[in-house]
Length: 590
Image 1 (cartoon, rainbow, N blue to C red):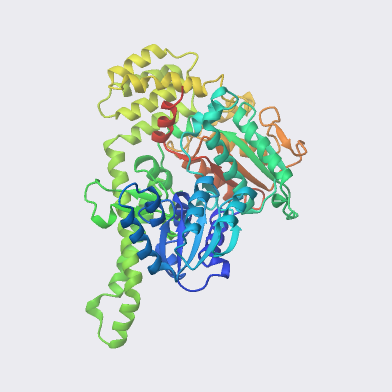
Image 2 (cartoon, rainbow, N blue to C red; image 1 turned 60 degrees about the vertical axis):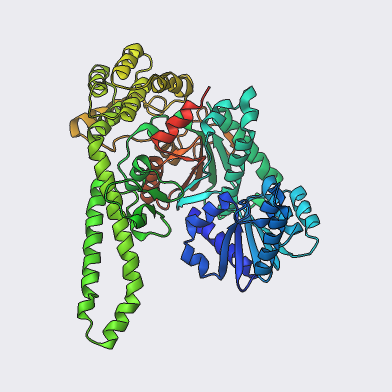
């Protein structure tokens, strides 16, 4: 189960027209399929497939058909521009890759009614309904459509074992399930359902077991609807691989509100938390000492070997790896120094190596710049100190010490306002029933936290307080009292290997329980499956409605490495949260 490999194989077939579109062609995408292609293909790789132009069907700057329809004045000019475009592109073939939505089909119908290309090869990222397929057929009056196919890449593959649907406001969607407000989020629900179905089809997996989070009405509804779709549509019925079964596990972010609030110390997670990592792109514009070519850089697991090898390394390991990268590059440049070119053969060898050296130079500069900016932000935000206290709030139960340290942090000028807010929220979740929330709110206000931000303490307790979430966040319900006390005692005696990474997300406890055959049915009921303790799957597809985090992704990657041969996990979510995006979604809750 490799999400990047599955998606890349689809995209490779698409950009060649599935072997039926030879010669120069135009690749036409929509907003989301543009992101899918960019996750697994670089621009140079696309050009090498005889792609003359990459265009957007839903953008009037790329599609003259839209301009001619939407323009209310100057129609003669729009018609003239369209005729010019037709002449320039009428000999080219079009490969079109779209999500199968009504809006996209409407745009496609306009394109086929006034065709700009010699042929059309249509590919859709999900299941195309018979009604929409009929509409396409009726619109193809010129008989230019040569093929229509479904390639199930309706998600963004970030790592081999991590995918996202890149949807926003999904926490409000999960909260609204089973209420009158659910219809306001019906489109988001459909998007999440289609995304999970596409993941199953892309990985060619028919779950033998489907389980869901019992306390979440949304998870139950999503699990049931996916099961009904699998039963009713033969396309999901794959041959069994002969191994133990595949489990689809549908969870809800509400069970673990702590993980998205914590500071991160692994490369991929740290970049997302402090700089933002969206569609594999990092914006460094505005950071000190950043050159123009490094203002926006790409961090892709598929296209950057150094990043793939070090994405889950902690901050200290990362520093050592970048030093080694820099030394290796310096050795290579000394070997190919222009002053050492004495013969024609030396010059030819240098010119052959020059593109590779230039590419490596940019890659080294990119990682050094990112590391430098991360180190600067860690320093000015006092994150070492803040993070250590966050971990204590997340992992230990000691109210008298914690409340004293919290008040100190809230009054400190060295701690930034957003970090004060996160500490307050972590305290509220840990000490919901015994903490003096009014006093803490007053101290937060003295520390400069705004009234609007302080209100999030009430919001997060309403969303994910002990009455709303399932068991497991602070060890309740997942471990017996003796094992919990033993772990606490051993930690106090031996310490921990890294005080900044002692927190374990609820997801990992859940996966460990599945591996041992001990995940209880009352907390995670079955939709289908034997339901007996000896039924331990060899493959688990986890989908967290409301979003996942890079900390969970790093822990899943470690789980896969340690348990290779026993169990393989692929993790998916509505989006990938950092603390900023998580708090923004909480602000939108009623």
